[in-house]
Image (tube, rainbow, N blue to C red):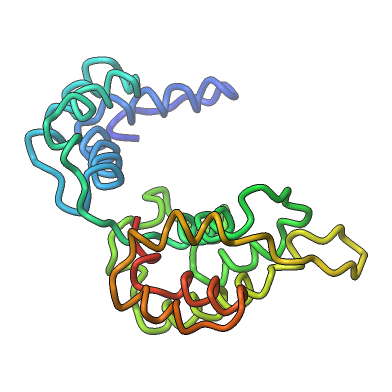
Amino acid sequence: MLGRTIKGRGADELDEVLDLLVAQPATARFVCGKLSVFFLGEQPPREVVDAMSAAFLRTKGNLPATLRPMLYAPQFASADAPRFKDPHVYLLSSLRAGFEQRELQNAQPLQNWLRRLGQGLYDKQTPDGYPLTADAWNSPGQMTLRFEVARQIGGGAAALYRPEGTNTPVPLPDLQPLRARIEPTLAPATRTALAQTTSPQQWLTLLLSSPDFMYR
């Protein structure tokens, strides 16, 4: 591997492989590129990524040290450009929006949604991880699936919050605190559309389907 023979000796082989990978500049650039895209947006400043990569190599992959150049960079404080949510962030933020105080009873529907949206747990077969850029997740097919999921969550997402094996109705929580908190931050067109809804279920479904909610 990388011009070096790994001798068979059990679990220690994995440690040797990881040490080899961590020492590679390409590994540093890849990891730091991923981190900076997540925190700073799709086009992070080159100098920030370079500083993070240097820290990664110098400290042999120490993450606090690697993050420090980014956290202290002026761009971090000003990184307020909206970033498109990947399926994982979209789904969890949807559930937090409507059901923040409710305890999840059955995670299987959530895992099914993640898989349908293309970001299933442990489904990524290559080590590069799922993409973080908008163009990977904003296709017409992806958006159609998101609208379908939004309808199910907006309807109460009963399967998530009902004890397994029961058919007990699960009422939608009081959405007034959420409305008061979030509506002033929405675009005028979104507020106008939400004002025309006639039930809490419609309001939550439309919110989760809105352009505003697709970004973090």
